Amino acid sequence: MDEKQLAGCIDHTLLKAEATSEQIRQLCQEAVSYGFCCVLIQQRWVPLAAELTANSKVKVGTVVSLPLGGDSTKIKAAAAMDAVFAGADEIDMVADMAAIIEGDSKYQLNELSAVLKVCRSMRPAVTLKVIIESAALTREQKIFACQIAQQARVDFVKTSTGMHPAGGATVEDVRLMKETAPNCKIKAAGGIRTVRQALEMINAGADRIGTSCGVEIINQCRTGQIQ
Image (cartoon, rainbow, N blue to C red; front, side, top):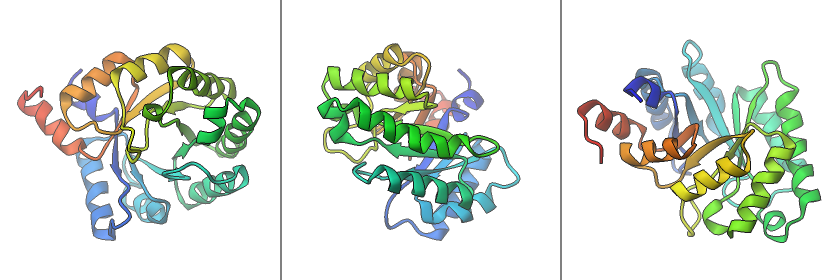
């Protein structure tokens, strides 16, 4: 995988609560300059990011129900719709953890279907990524979450918010998710800071890498620093 291909797999991420407009501008400029797939930001910055990336191939992504995922289905669907009308091309939604842990397939499927309906109603359709917080789950819970995601036909299953104390993405989880939900794409996120980590995730089955270290990763790639 060359530098351009790797950059095209990266969601250039800035989700800190204290992020400023100046930092969002820098993030978008870096995304355009390096050829990243997407910028991932808090919802309040979507209009600005959409304006800054309007003449580029960079997509604008935002989060719904970050970091806990405990908002009601109605709130999640409304937040997704608001984000899309503000200019978002992609939605990263945190799944309901209680539903996953309890194996409540009815609740989980209803939630995913409701938000996906919003995304699919747009032209062009908006990409939906579902975050399952894999590091906090048992193997059986991970499989359940991926099976429901595939049943709902979401676009991506995503490992982590990067904010849970249990940790972020692992190669083993990415591999399991790809095997369990083969019809979904996989996004690895949480703790990915080096080109070696990024490539390991991609080799395990990740289609997208979420990281706040995209610039560093591509610079490592350019200089041959496979760390």
